[in-house]
Image (cartoon, rainbow, N blue to C red; front, side, top):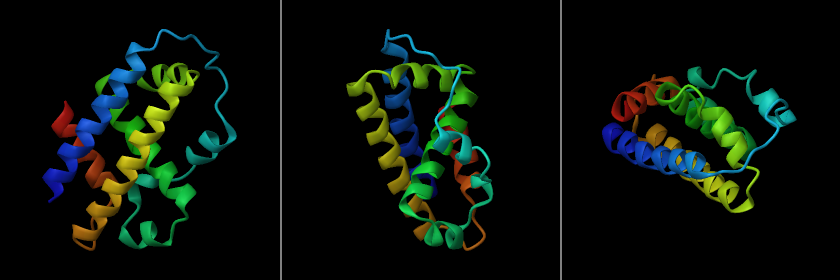
Length: 132
């Protein structure tokens, strides 16, 4: 099941990556949103099923965005900049947010099926291996 989740996540990531790369929009990427700054302080990689189950929907979305960016950066060093630029286009932003929602659902499935000691970092590592 872990491999299936990783493959689905890889497909979602590639969709978001292609969307971000195809956007010709330019944006000021110097400033991140307050939510992104707060999310960067959270150690999502160490999250277990217990952490996931206790998290709010907003925190789960933050974890999914974290996963998207971690895997994206391992594939392409400028991934987060490209996504930030792409998010200036409303239709592209909607596609990225849909991908984040799908990743969030996959993380939930992963934790439902994983061993009790499994972490989000384990899933990120497995997904990164699949897409690289």
